[in-house]
Length: 417
Image (tube, rainbow, N blue to C red; front, side, top):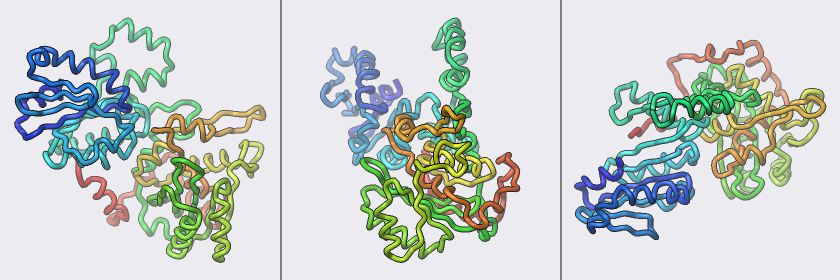
């Protein structure tokens, strides 16, 4: 109705409005008939033109149009201008969709955006929700944030709500019906809260300068997988280097350049798809530690393989005060995996294929794997950095005059409409 109202009242030349669902099929199935039903009197009187193939309605008196799009084809939105847009079920959309695709379409005419959805975890919806809350709190009038539980909307019958509450798990009910982002399943490796707190921590150069620098490399396997390089120093992880479509020689050259720049104490490379990268780096004279994710765990009584062991070491590091970059994709990858126990009562991390099914567009946890590989083995001095710190992470937030990430924070906060 907001789209219809603004399109009818639009005084700008060739006004353009959009409704975006996670999939174009969803937009057509859920909204197209409803949109035409709302406009039926104007359609019958010839005041509104309907284009079935383009899923667009055009108001004849001012030429303003409302179109339906799917977030599964972001390129269809590039190069257009929008005066208003509704993004529905935002939690199911790619993290880059807003910043890289939709936001630029609103810039020319200072258009508006409405984000609608149900909470899931660390994703685009959570990202814009937190942005809006922070800016609204600072009296930035460009944002307004509201959250309603099932008890506040009058959309569902009270008896039906109680029936759902009785049938659903407590975690599912709190997420779906109460908008609780911080719900953690019993089998979840890291909670949304754990990851968010880690992303809010910042350490100064002085805090970490005596800790060894470690590089973790996760070469792409196939398809849409990314090659990722992560740099970690003590309790601080820096912005990851992410590449698509690079060959082994190019990736090896990039790793070599970073080794020259940062002088790491250790470089760990996933051996599963990194044989070519490892061979090339060794040919160049570098010392590389290859890591078999499916290999035997150092503590084979507790973990079913080395991959599980590395992820649990990474979890312990996060809970002990580790600081993560504010990367939405990394946050999603860390807060998604679950674990179970095998027949020998050893911890067993969820398979990569199962994790991919729950990440947007069946994405792969490449960034998280690159971080996990930095915990393959203890690097001299590393354990002393955080072993004695308290487990409660919120107490480790430090306020200092120097913020090494100020530049990146300013970039991320450069626009908020």
